[in-house]
Image 1: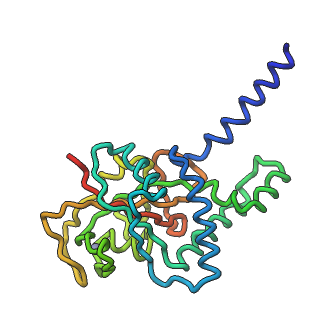
Image 2: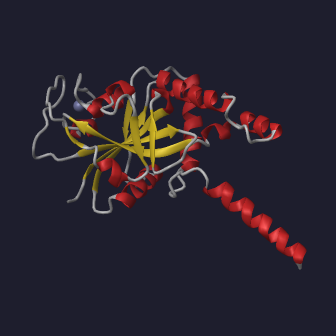
Image 3: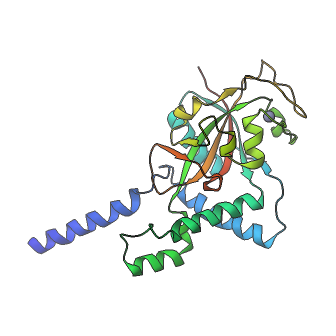
Amino acid sequence: MAQAQVTQTQLNQSQPIYNNNYGMPPTSSSDTSSSDTSANAIISTNKSKLAKTQLKVLPLHDNEYIQIQRYFLKGLPHARIHTIIKLQMPTKLVEAHEQYKKTLLNNPSYGSNMTTNNLISSMKSNNNLDKHTNTMFHGTKISCNPQRFINGNSNFCLFNCGMCGIIQNGNQGKYSRFNGRMWFANNSAISLGYCGLSTSRTMFNCTPFSSKNSLMAMFVVDVVSLQTSDIIIVDVDAATLPKYLILFEPGF
Ligand SMILES: [Zn+2]
């Protein structure tokens, strides 16, 4: 009887630790995002390199759309999603992001409490590269009407538009209003506080923002961090890679 209890305890311990640890959204988008990342990496090395971000409007029935929608609406159940755009970032940003993951794992302080065997096998496993990747939200200001993206027009504001900047170049600490640090939350309600209209409406090459159109912009970003928490703050651009842009009305 005592033996049976020990076995049971071991089973109970090993399973939840493996499943719960890394703060991925409970939508189990870990499957798509990790396989998706490696698929993108393969595509980007085999095919011509992307110099500019590709925007793809996701159909409503698309599995990725459904997962992102569920994750987003958890924090903002009354919001109305207008469009979810999948972002394929320029190859150099994807490569810098992948390199950052490797650098993190090779850091001597990483894995100091792992056995050598664990460390070696985890470094060989490509899947392990994604285990510190957190799917997070990032709200930003917009100076233009994002409706044009849906019609296939991808002209961008030259400056003063957080949305256009992130679509083209990813999150950049130099544009942070927080001393070079970039904030990400795993709850869309928190990130909503950072959304809105840019106060200075300087725009070029962009459709002027109409007051009739009250769309807001929130990004879903892969953020690599050893610490998993509701809010992750990073100061390295390559730690982040935008995956989706959600255009929405907050619903209040
Ligand atoms: Zn813009």
